[in-house]
Length: 484
Image (cartoon, rainbow, N blue to C red; front, side, top):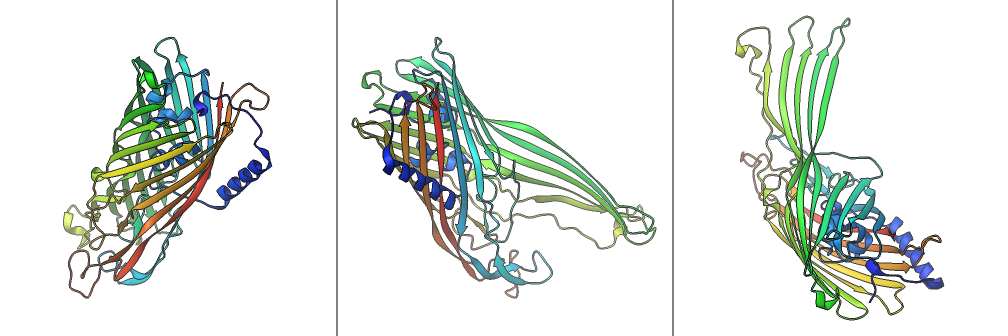
């Protein structure tokens, strides 16, 4: 059985194959999907691993191995440089949430009922790039790899989402950011391979000052300054392929460190709204975590059980119990400079600090299974995969807050077309396509009596009286793979 890692596969696929390719590309552009997490965690980089439900720890990562398992980079091959380029497009479709309480006395002056805008979750259109190069093939086959993802509709999109109104907390922005992975792999001997990698996050710090004037001969001003610093998150992988089975069986493991892209904002504001009376200053700081990737342990295996078939299994343990919410939390708001040295001269003005609902999070097991079938001619490879991901929230949000993360079933299909030449060059080439359907289980949320701080029943919790969550996710992608 010859898969792309060391294939030299030939040829024309015929009229029916071309029609099938056109069909896949058409479906790819018609349907859409989104992810509950970063691209690699939710689907896997590249259409091949995506069609296998992300089970790429033990085999098949190609040029995207720097993410899936950097130990895979050091696998022997006739080629020295591998290049993968992919396009992905995604968008979720959630159940409508209508006629619920969206504002109560806890967050505003008066109650208000309305609908939740579930169409505000942005689609993901982006490109992936994977490169691997054998820098020292004579020294343990040391190989370096680079994997990136960049959204095409914007460089990055940041939105902390709603703190109390129903919010699919992992769907808002986590695929709307650049993703960069660097990996290094080498062969240890006796069938063992080792790799290390780094995932880049960042820290955003911003300061803003505002002064508002209301007089005819005055002006208002504002200043904003921000700094962005990279923050690395490390991961490592190991791979074992028994030498006597000639790459028909492999087992791999990856450990990923938790990493958060956080945001710190300081605001100093003042307003002179009546003549020449002294201005009232209002100052506060705010903190949030824009993107969070949990610590993860991944264990996987692949088994080539026949000349035409290979099976992939993978089990992950994701440490979501330490999840940091993206909501922007206001700290220590203060008013001062009210025209007197007396701290009480501002009257009875008291600014309430921010408060985020106390959600409980849990760690998750995520099973994945994939199957790959290559007929004897080796021109076409068929793939399918399935994975299940439970909710990382403990119980339903019947109390304070409305963070949503329904469990989901993930179904995947794919096809690979292998060629021995690319545009006249003696370079093996493969085109991969994948389709994905995710079913988010329906959840019925019935809010408990009283508001968020236990006031009498004349005020209710946001989200009252009840609503349903869930939905579907459709999508697909394509990948061009080359070896030189």
